[in-house]
Amino acid sequence: MYDDQLVKRLEIKVTETRSKILELIYNVQSGHCGGSFSAVEIVTCLFHHKMKIDPQNPEWEDRDRFILSKGHAAPLLYVNLADLGFFPKKELAEFRQIGGILQGHPDKNKTPGVDMTSGSLGMGLSIGIGLGLSAKLNKKNYKTYVLMGDGELNEGQVWEAAMFASKMKINNVTAIVDYNGVQLDGSTNEIMPLSPLKEKWESFGWRVIEVNGHDIADTLAALDRAEQITDTPVVIIADTIKGKGVSFMEDDHKWHGQAPCKEEYERAIAELERADIQ
Image 1 (cartoon, rainbow, N blue to C red):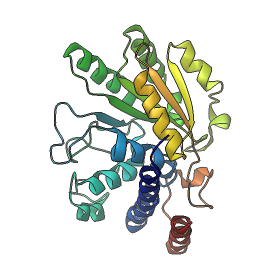
Image 2: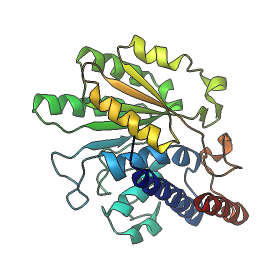
Image 3: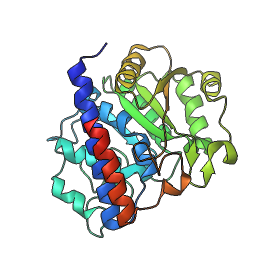
């Protein structure tokens, strides 16, 4: 069980984050709403409760690492980093601007708090496992969290990494699949079915935790449980909804990489504000 005040604090943060993501994307008329919205609860739980980090010292050697392998969800990462103080919030206004520190996909060399430059799908798990292996060899106790999209699992490199992690008994990396069932051009079932996903990971030697990725308490419990499993690699399969929080965006692949017009923006903000009141 988790303290009600903690859960409520994170729920409020979730709504604020979705509104801020929408504002970023609307202002520049470019970015990815759907995949950002589906993972808000997961990233909020990690950055605002679970991870060992220091915004004043982004390169702290013993910090926990976070890899946004689905790099197109960069607005989600930027809003959290700014909220924690990794960089001034005024930088959010420069999202996707030439010369700014917030590129369309995360760039480790430009943005404080970004642990991996990402955008080419399928690479995050390999790098995360490399970080995990490095920590073991150097007797460090930091953890690495890798957030992947489900469409990203079409990439063969993911499964090569999964095999390697099992062989090397990497137990300090938690993979998280944002399982929203929708990718760029349609549903994952139409494009490349993933089912049975749990059994696929288990056959590669991973322990699987399934969770409702929009339930704060359940997500916190899943992250705690993953930490307690020390004999095998762990993956959390989080059932989510693409575009979560805005009715006309939910489960619609059109909103994978489309910015809202003024009317859509105002309608979406109104829905998010109503959710905040409830």
